[in-house]
Picture (cartoon, rainbow, N blue to C red):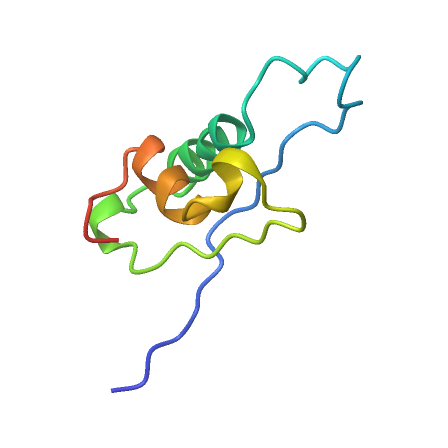
Length: 83
């Protein structure tokens, strides 16, 4: 069976300065989870259980970002544990 990737909506986080910006008090996994939650709201009728995969890139993984970052984000966003 052929599976196709489908883009259902787009969203992004704010861009800010690391030490002085408005996002400095937020963890990167919290911000990314908020993006997924926003996408789920925009994709009306999409059941989170229908999401097969979450693929997230992280250019400089360190600390919490180095520990299966996409999995952490998917769980924080409320996706099922089998995603």
